[in-house]
Amino acid sequence: MSRETLLNQVAGLVQQKLKPLAEDIDRKGLYPEAFMRELGEIGGFAYVGSSEEGGSGLGLSAQIAVLREIGKECGATAFSAWCQAACAWYLHQTPNQSVKRYLPDVLSAKVLAGTGMSNTVKHLAGIEEHLLQAVETEGGYTVNGILPWVSNLGANHIWANTAQIGSSYVMFITGAQREGVSLIACPEFCALEGTRTFAVKFDNVFVPHEDVLAEPDQFTDFIKSIKTGFILLQIGIGAGIIDACLKEIELANVGSETNYFLDHGFDELTKRYNTLLVKTEKLAHESYQNQANLLETLQARADASQLCLDAAQSAALHAGAKGYLMSSPVQRRSREALFVAIVTPALKHLRKEISDLEFMGGEEFSI
Image 1 (cartoon, rainbow, N blue to C red):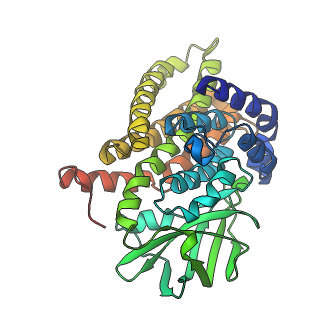
Image 2: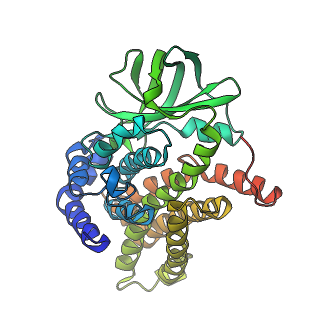
């Protein structure tokens, strides 16, 4: 099936099944599990997997386009779908065949999946201490610690984590059904409540070698192989929100003579957006071939954050007093856009890494 045909099916499912739920997802914290599973059934998560792995092999750019379609109607669900896609990306990239047994079910959403990599990504950028620690034991590793924010979780979901072991790290798959794993409710968010986000406690959790995505001696190469894809997939979330904001700006401009005086008008935002989409497409193709430039990827992701913020604020200002109502779409989009700029890697994190890489002449730090 072609990329265009698959994306048309995704767009149809979003309109039929997700759009009617968007307000309840945002206001009541509804988790759209049925939509996520239906999306998997029609191939909505299969893009990063090869045909041999049970995927469509259409690549990261197509998966980003799926997340964009979801984000047009619901930024929270686009984020949950990103979690699923990111876990699939890790499983696709792992050199360890035993853990790939999870991949077909993640690609089809028979198993829903998250990504507990926020702490690791920030730790490797020198921003915070690593919160999970591992010791080697017979047949695998024992892991202890608490991660504060992990999304797209549930009693039968799986997710990826990294634990520090001495001077290196081990990355692995686990789930809430594992002995010693506990899901702890988080404080209420201002948005993204429908994403099943928990703190995760590990109390002497055993991780067998067959669930390891990257052993300590594989970790440096593995994290480099997944990092650009992890970051680029997030642009799909922001792209959908930008689409929605541009639509609201266009609607608000009908019959208005004063919106002309606002900054970040429709034409300016559209020009910036088209530039971002072209750049993202290029980087996604390169990343799928393990050739993407990290500095360019970080810059594209930072541009997506800033553009999302500008578009959402502009949409609210164009809407005027109507945009300040809780029922207004631009009110929700403002909160979703803020999330795009603070989710790991946050805009300040991205700018730190960009500065560090530019100082090093574009060369990535050793881990």
